[in-house]
Amino acid sequence: MEGFSSLAQIQTALVSRDLNLSDLVVDYLKRIEERQELNAFLEVFSEEAKSAALIIQEKIITGTSGKLAGMVIGIKDNICYINHKVSASSRILDNYTSPFSATVVERLLAEDAIIIGRLNCDEFAMGASNESSYYGPVRNNADLTKVSGGSSGGAAVAVQANLCLAALGTDTGGSVRQPASFCGVVGLKPTYGRVSRHGIISYASSFDQVGPITRCVDDASLLLEVIAGADEHDSTSSSKSVPDYSEIKPSSVKKKIAYLSEALHSEGLDADVKLAFERSINSLKAEGHTVEPVSFHFLEYVVPTYYILTMAEASSNLARYDGIHYAYRSEKGVDLESTYKRSRSEGFGPEVKRRIVLGTFVLCAGYYDAYYAKAQKVRRLIRDKTDEILSEFDFIMLPTAPTPAFTIGESSDDPVVNYLADIFTVQASLAGIPAISLPAGNNKAGLPLGIQFLGKRFEEGSLLSFSKDIEELLEDQ
Image (cartoon, rainbow, N blue to C red; front, side):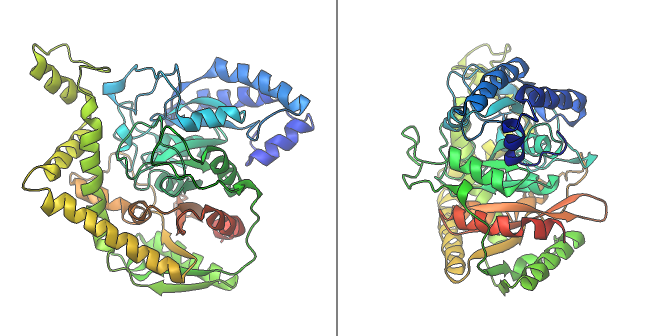
């Protein structure tokens, strides 16, 4: 099993009978059991996965299997799966069982993917290190003392450690791309609206997008093809037709790529990350691509704008967890008001409570115009400037994260310092455009690094084609 890095390899072995799907599932289950110290999985669907393998193996033999036959995949613990627990890694939803499946889950199963379990994440997808989870931090397989990144840390580590072939995460401000960078795998954030959000536990509704984490761009392309498309249950999903992303070939056309000069000279940029970024620029130029610096004066505003807006939306979205309707209810409540207060105080972790409080503050009368309304205007400026750059260039190039994975427990007492870790990923989220993080080798300590590319709205095809062309170039440089 160690030799499989793509679904194409697995399907070839299955068709030739060199591999049995049941054996593949058992191997993954064995590895999950052996690597429990990573804390990537919150729950493993062992018997279901084994049963599904038998059914899908027969489909493969008869030639009736779906596009994802042979893919063993994990799902982030904020993606609903009917009759399965889903908690968003929070105490307030501990032991909650979903009465329905997310649209993306239905589409995976319709194409014969095997869902092997649910994956740890930052509580309600709020975090960049997977340390805010009620169930403890996820450990990076490259160094168990380091964080996995977040909030889709369990998803990234599960793929990194070969506990499953692929995973679905969610990306609000970089929560697929940043852990992918920390773990040396591929992470794709689609255009906002490209993938249905139905059945995704909301953090910030105007930002959240489901995206794949994989070992190669081909698998990311195929997964996007399967999960993308209009959904009657999600009014924000786009009605644009879904291209055959899996059929897209590596691009042979040389591209014009912009990189933000402010990013390259940012004070918080780690020396090894900067070196890898400069090396990537030189490698792309050597391949005949045009790579030029551009100025983006809004870089210092992207993080405050993002957090003002997402905290406001979180304040609204998380109001439903009140200790009355469902989920955790404190036993110490003696009346309605104390039940509300105690249930939310005991059920939510510190980071979630911080964001709810700040989000409520910026929405208050007297502060709304000064913070939330102004942030919406700045968001539009950021989007327009990003679109302006992309009207002249094919892609924008950035480091995925300003540093490699940091040590567990190293987090500063100042939350703002931690929020700045999102400085290079939130631009794509604010602009609503697609972005992909590709592995870009390791630093001197052997920790993975990532390079990110941003593309035009709903032009994931071009982004994926280019990524297929350069993924080996960046990883082997």
